[in-house]
Image (cartoon, rainbow, N blue to C red):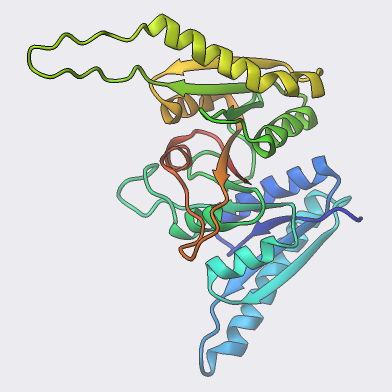
Length: 287
């Protein structure tokens, strides 16, 4: 098998096992191998060999479960002694997709998720899929039966990597693409004694719909077998994505690659989708 593998990070938790099962299904669809990754911190002292042994045993057990469910799937394992974020980001360089589970931080279920998942999604060189807590059953069965692929289209030039990811996933699943573009009516302000001219909301909506249509046209032509629904929604991009996620199999958003000392990070729309979307969220890096 020559294609780069699909990677799944696991620590043995129910959330990570759901991510493994989701990743296994995705690897089968792509005709790729699955690589299970377990990262453990390197301590000083007597616990080193114990953690190595426990990590290896964990990977062997999860690998056995996956092979039992998907005997046709090639599955290998990687045990890394490193901090979780740099370890997973380094491992991602050898794969085509990284799948992570996530946990709420307690007290605000559905509003907070693990910092490791967020940071890796903001730095990974390849697309990262994050399964939200409660967005998928522990046995890996998607909670949505419709299989829509929801993709966010930004106000600037449409990122080819993001739309390619969304349309190719829809083609693999026999699903439709729901492309959403969120826009807001600009606030009107005028000084004392001045008369503010209100914006024409109808004109703004028409411009939003035209922008979305132009962004999607090349992909409709490249993937004529994929049904497409375009939604230009007032209320902002984050709200439009979250609202559309209820019937989705996956939500696809972009992340601009930033090359500076602080490293990559996620914008407000990505944060909102990762915290509130009702389906797994794919974060796709693009130039």
